[in-house]
Length: 401
Image 1 (cartoon, one colour):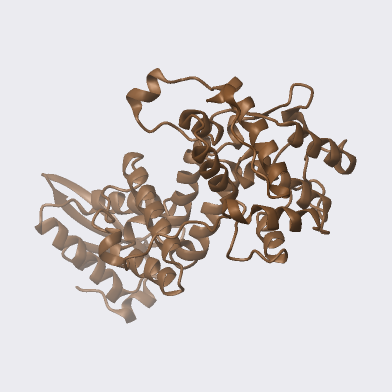
Image 2: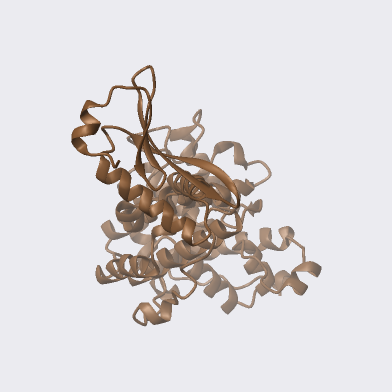
C-alpha cells in the first residue's frame, strides 16, 4: 500500500515502509526517519539516500525517486551521479572567478612588481570581480565578460577595457592548464569584435624646445622636497616613475656613481644598473638631508614608511602648468628622442631605458650592458639638461661618436 501524508505522521514501528517502485521510508529504533530508493544497476542491488523525513516530504521524495529512475533508464547509476555532482559542486565552490583570479595573479607575481600586481588586482576587482567574483568560474559565460568589458568602455576607458579583457582571457587560459576549468569559454572574445576601434594615444611628453621654460619652473617649485628631488632624478636617469618612487638608499653607491635596481622592482624582472651623472649624485646628496637614515629615498610626507604616491609626479607637473602637456613617463621619451637626434648608439640608449631586445636571435648574441658607454651618455645628458636651463645646447662629445 502506498504511503500517505496522514500515515507518515502516525508511523511508529521501526522497519521499512514501502511506497512502491523501490521507494520506502526507514524508521530506526532510535527514531530516525530516512527516505531510501532501492534499485538495481549492472545486476547489483543498491540503495540511494533521498533525505530525512519530515524535512523531505512524501511528494519531494517521490520526485527525487522519479529523477533517479530517469537516470537508470539512461544507463546512469544515480548514486555515482550524485557523487559526481557533489565533487563538481565542491570543485566550483573553491574555483570561483575571484579565487582563480587570485591564484593566477600569485602565479604571475614572479614576473610582476608588487606595484603592477596591486594595480592589476584592483582593476579586476573594480571591473569584473565586483559583480562576478563569487560565481563559479565554469558558470560564467563569454557574454557576461563581454558586457563587463563594454561597461568599462562606456565610461570612456577604452584602453582599460582592452587590458581587462586581455587579463581575463589570460586567466582563463591559465585555469584550463591548471585544471580549474575544463574548457575555455572566452576563446572567441576578440577585442576587435567587441570593442570600438581606438586611436593610439602616446603619453604627453615635453619637446626639447620646451626644456628651458620647464627647467626654470622646476627650479621655482616650492612643493615637497621629496617630489622635487624625485622629479630631478627621474629626468636625469631616464628611469620609470615607479623605479624612482620606490628607490632605496641601499641601492645606491654614490662614490661609484651607480644605482643598482634589483630585479624584483623592474618591469622586466631583470637587474638594471643605472650610471649616475654628477648632477644625479648631487640630487641624491641633497635628498639625503631629508631622508637619510630611512629605507626609502623618497618617502611620503604623510606615511614615511611608504614611497611617494603614484600620482605625485603628474600632480606636481599639473601644479607647474603642464597638465596634459607632460607626464612623468614622458621624460623617457624626451631622453630617447634627444639622444637619438644626437646620434648616440641606439643599443646604448635602449639598454639605458632597460628595454628588452625582442629579436630572440639578436638577444642571444647581444648581452652587453654597455655600462661604460652609458656612463658617458648619462653624463652628457646631465650636462645637456644643465645647458638647456639657459637655452644652450651641449653637443655630443667626439669620444662617443
